[in-house]
Length: 243
Image 1: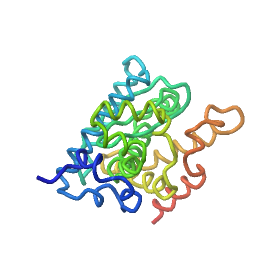
Image 2: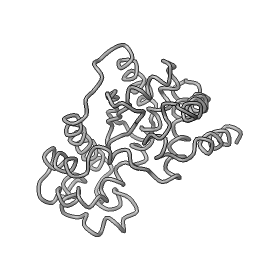
Image 3: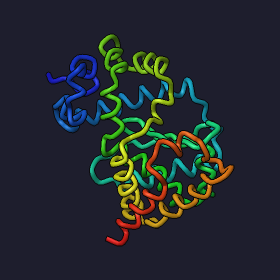
């Protein structure tokens, strides 16, 4: 029986991963098998991450964010993912996704949205894009340290050992500018498909511009430094809207 993606990570990555166009091409098998394995890998990584990253105590805002995640996930047409949204107690704005569905937003970044559903939705939809378009998975399976550990063991033990080596900040590393702009476009389209305001992304990015000036909360932070310039992201969304 053909190995699933999760089973194959430990045996078939190696140097081959560097030449693969994406994770699915690397492993092969059916889309259903790959998706199940991706979800399993994401859950193991999330469990290992939660041992190191505290969450905000559940409140109305965290529940609202989780509801928005479910609202958006219902409108993803290409694949059905078990999207889960968790709010971390990190001290600075941050957002990242794991393969298969887990999305993490930091409390300071959530607060910037001011409780506006569609602005929160843009943050979450942007991360859903990285999952759905397999940006997150492609990046992880090409990580040499993860590949080595998956050859030695599997599941949560490998995920935990890998995070011990590289640190949780690995999930905040920069995607390509092309990936980030693609995720913004995907997010706007997803919000529109769900019945929300497609202009909310531009409003939030404009708010982030204000926060990045002077002593604003984004000044010098990882989140601000690992995305394309905000002006470029806004221009991209304006171009999509006008087109």
